[in-house]
Image 1 (cartoon, rainbow, N blue to C red):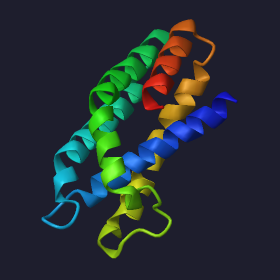
Image 2 (image 1 turned 90 degrees about the vertical axis):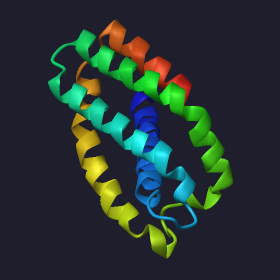
Image 3 (image 1 turned 90 degrees about the horizontal axis):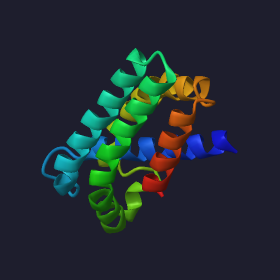
Image 4 (image 1 turned 135 degrees about the vertical axis):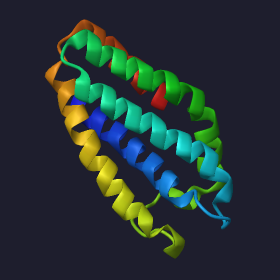
Length: 139
């Protein structure tokens, strides 16, 4: 069950990456540029912290830091998701979003080991608490 939740989390992360890739230029999606640049920074920081985490408390701290940033951005992301519902389905993205697939693959590869580390420390109470908090924010 926990693995399904984390796969959903990864799906959300990939959605964020999709937004990142479509944010540039002056096209239809130009207004999402600022939030998507921030999203890219947040995901990158999370992955970097997870790479360095070597204990349950450090993994929990990385998750909580990520959750803090996501909590700040979530209202704007939800607003953009409603305004641009076509960005939810990345199986057939608009032509101008072709770079999304490449960027999504890169982020997916970087997030994989981070998610593995979360699973490695999933028995730690601090990690469980941080996971629950992040899941609540991402709903």
